[in-house]
Each structure stands twice: as C-alpha cells, then as structure tokens.
Image (cartoon, rainbow, N blue to C red; front, side, top):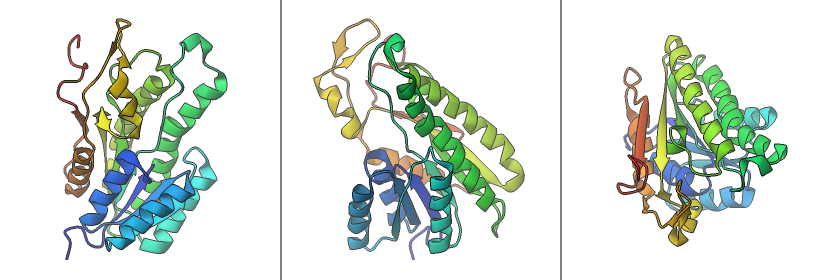
Length: 253
C-alpha cells in the first residue's frame, strides 16, 4: 500500500506546470487527486496520463475566481473521493509586463480574481469540509512567490496579489487552529515550466538590464509540496522558499 493511500487532495491549476508536477507527486504517493483548471482539454490529457500510470485522478474544469465554479469543484471531489485532506492553491497568473500606469482595470481584476480571490474561495470551501469531516482537519498549502517579498519590474498586479496571499496564509493558519487545519505557503522562484521559458532569452532586471536567469527542475517543487502535505497536522511548514540557487533575488543580485 502506498504511504498516503486513502488520502485526498485538490490541486488547482493542476493540468500543467507546477500544479501538474505536484498532483503527480501526490498521486504517486497514494493520494486520490482532483485537479482543477480552466482548460478542459489539458485536464483531460493530464488525467489520461495519470490513469495510464495507475494513479487516481479526477479533472474538474474550474474558474477559481467564480464562487459557483469553486463550489462545483469541491462538491465533485467529495462525491468522488469522500473527504479532503490537502488543498494546494496553485492556480494563478500575471498581467502583461507593461507600465503600471498603462494597466487596464480589467487586467488588474483578472489577476486579483485568479491569484487572491481564487485562493480565498477555494480555502473557504476546503475549511467547510475539513471542519465537518471525521477525523476533523486537513492542510491548505498556498502558492505564494518570491514576489510576495520582492517585486520584479512591471509586476504590480502579481506582486500585490502575492503579498495578499501571504496575509491570507497567516489568517487561515490562525483561524484554522480550532478545526485542526494547518495552512502553509510555498514561495517558488524560477522553477522550469512553460512560464519560465522566456528567461532563456533574458529577463528584465531592476537596473533596466536584461539577464538570463537560472532555473531548476520543477520536480523539486512537487517533492516539497508532498513533504508539506505528509506532515502530521500538529506540525506545519508555515513558509518555505524554493528557488534557483544563483537567481538574482538575495542581496543585490
């Protein structure tokens, strides 16, 4: 029997990148995993891949910024798997890299909805389930970012929402105690996914220059999410930063 047989997880943004890697790490450890995302065809391909490997995975098309869509995700997960042990709030994105004064309200709102509102809505549904199930409790892991601490140029919506996620992580960690719900945050820098491919040709730096930044294998993010997920509920990784060792983040680059 796999280590985590009988345990259930939801991973938002689970069809590709960090979410997919984390979903597979959990499923290979024995979790039944529901993955959520907007692109149904991507979810279907990921579920098909998991099924071929003998893993338990469910795909649910979801807009995390929409309350009814989020409720549907959690309802279908409980209907299929019966409980919820881990939520990984991974879905999100950024606005185009343009000057802050040129951002439209719609561009700002799209990022707020996916990064911050989505994390809140999914956490809210998870708490309702976790506090009512037997045994009571569970774990919520939020995908922050190193942008939750230090911004990149022209990233106001992303940076602001990731700072907001850090505050939400702390509030859930505090408010979840009475229900035996742990909440922590993983802050990721330069994991190699489709989102970081552009770094191969250079990324804008604070001094106006362009530099090629190092990346690292995204599997290490999945391993970290699995480690956090498998801790007993009396133990919590409150915040963890996983990043490319030589990326320009610590100090002045």
